[in-house]
View 1 (tube, rainbow, N blue to C red):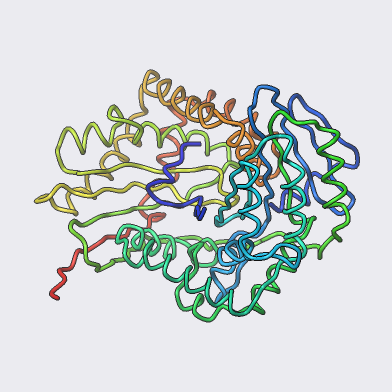
View 2: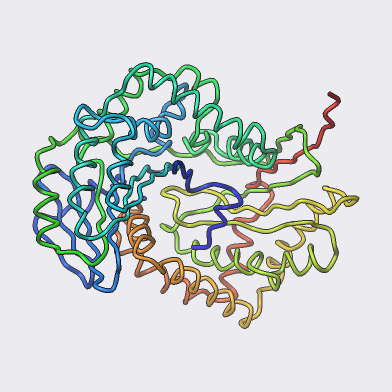
Length: 449
């Protein structure tokens, strides 16, 4: 589950700061498996609790099946804008009250939006969980969407888009590549939305989106830490149980047409150096091939001993930076990418060709067992170390719940451990082919002002 999210900004947008799964696998009676307790309320709200007596704090998270994949053409960016508006208050608690109340008891709160979901969380002392439960239940059903506040926050998001994309050449290339790689699937638009759609976003749009998707049967809760389970469940049932079930939403069922040749996009933008990003259509964790693709990404791009760094950055001295990226935990098939920025004086075409040579080498000859074992160990270490806090244990649980069932996380390591050298070679041959590639190139331009 190697994620280079700091580079691409793919999975999370964190601001002042995985869930159709909430309507799947529902249980009529509570279930307890190891440290995880599961119960679904009558209104469809699933609750997952991780008990950890050693944790010094508690984490409360609410996950909604309200990522950008549920937006429509012409109305992109609503998921993210609504995340901002969720901090603008309810009739009971006015603007900015939520965060102030959490901070007053020594806690932290935040939120994030992705293509697949939106989530809200607080970290606080276990005996303060009642506050989180009351506040989150309140804004699940009583959010105020004031016209002036919405326009003001819309301007904030538009400025954020300028900073993250309009003024960031590499992110702009990524945005163009994804948009070209997908023709039909809503993954093709950015989480933050297109600027024109943000300009036209209305309070009515947000209200409709909120009333449809911010409902108990389209969400789930995760609580983690050294908690009193019966007391926490009683509080959740008291505050959330009275919220009525929302409309039954159909799961997203969008098929992407077959790609029949390489696609290319070019971005002309003020920049010091060119940049290239090549992305291949690839499966998610629903395919057994995903485990070999995870290992392949580690072989190519994890540390100074990885192939791309050793050969292109350190060896041939072609790249200032270069690497590969893949994540199997998108809810739908996404992309496997290689990328790079050439050293000054080096050709972008030469670097692009060198990246492809690394892929072709893996197709022609399987990596050694030692190289694969090292990559398997690294992938396993990343997965385990990524859960070094109670917060991230909860987030990983949620990520797999979004994929269908939180228990899938137990199958991930087994899948990684079973990858063989011939599996790595096979998936390289199967997926990293020219006809399935979308390539974006940044062409620097000089600002003459």
